[in-house]
Image 1 (cartoon, rainbow, N blue to C red):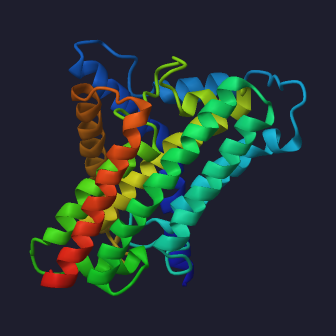
Image 2 (tube, helix red, strand yellow; image 1 turned 60 degrees about the vertical axis):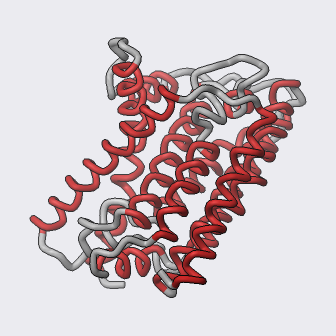
Length: 316
């Protein structure tokens, strides 16, 4: 990798980390508009992070070093995932060193440490949220892998930059296999990021919360890192969706400055459209009972497998 490519990859990762809270703020603002509310503004996430960073952390009695280290590991895992996923350009810092299977492993590492930290204190809410989170992860990961396998078979590679290059340079062709995979991926995105209909990120009700139950004991900078990592996880998933289902408009690192800036604007537009669609889904959908979550994710898995079979049988 040349110095220019490395610089553009670092800039791509830095932009992803900085823009992640803005995506959460945009989704919240769009949901407020759709519900005929004013909303707190798209910059509210930055205000919350700034407020948390200036507070003093309160650590629960009996907390182990794992509890203190978990927020940093979770945030670091999401940054590592952002280095694998091409977000604002066609290249990534680790795009040629780690493939989509390793990417699923990075997401799993963050989930495991979050669940372990939630159970570390021994509270009922933390254990409840950890069990539910592992259930969701256990069901969502196979569906996500099937989605990746479909795109990998089309491009003959498991590397996201290669998938982007293959799909963006091909002729305008409708892939039925990718259509099934896209629906499955959206369902996995909602489940993995604790969004409606699987979870409600704004609730603290005992019978419904999953993600929030695991972070109730955190405060100050630890909570800020967790929330920032959650926002970056959502951005990573949206970037994966853009890379596999709408890769057009991404510029390579050897392109001109005007082309790169134009690609960044196009990516911001795609993120805005994705955020609007996510807010629309959350507004029109009702929260599912926790016992219906396996059925939701089983449907996603079946759709992903159907997309894989369609490609195998029809080769499209």
